[in-house]
Image 1 (spheres, one colour):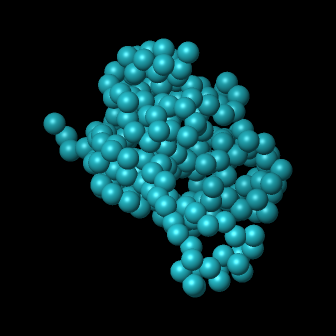
Image 2: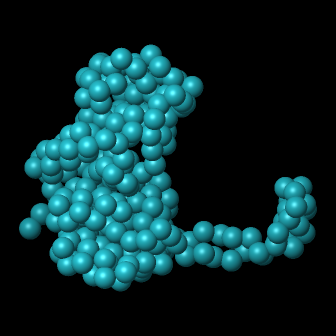
Length: 245
């Protein structure tokens, strides 16, 4: 059996919260210098373990605040683990937050080069690929338009087109496929299927339970930062639906 592209072992992600409220930053800084500020840990994710093999789609479901986005940021190498470890073999294309990495004052084609650079791609390559990326996203006529005027759906199309234009080893998708019109959703799912067939591992977070059932090979249900169930997507979604009633 092939080696997993993603290995998550006993992952924990904690955020530090101040227990001493201050009215101004100056007041907070003075208290910090005097060591009058105390912190507590808020565990957004704890005790999560799973792996994802080449060509596998691993779906993640759960209510808001379950820790799904923090988990995705750890897999995408945006957040370091507070405990445990995350091993990702190869290149990662993250689709975590719509517009993350974009500059709203720049045009669509300028943002393609910028976002591509953040993903580790050469600016020369991104300039060569700009036309095809915009064409796939149905945004050619908006090439020179600042993206501050783009709708959420347009941003989703642009971000997804850039992230998947060059085949990564791992694609991390957080809710993006549930945004936009039906035509975009069909088109993006077809591209994900193409990536799967070529061996790309995909971690997919979505509140669209039918999408998880249709697309994922395995699924995990998270709640309060911990996994409640990992297994067959239909079984996981069915249990989550029953719990959510």
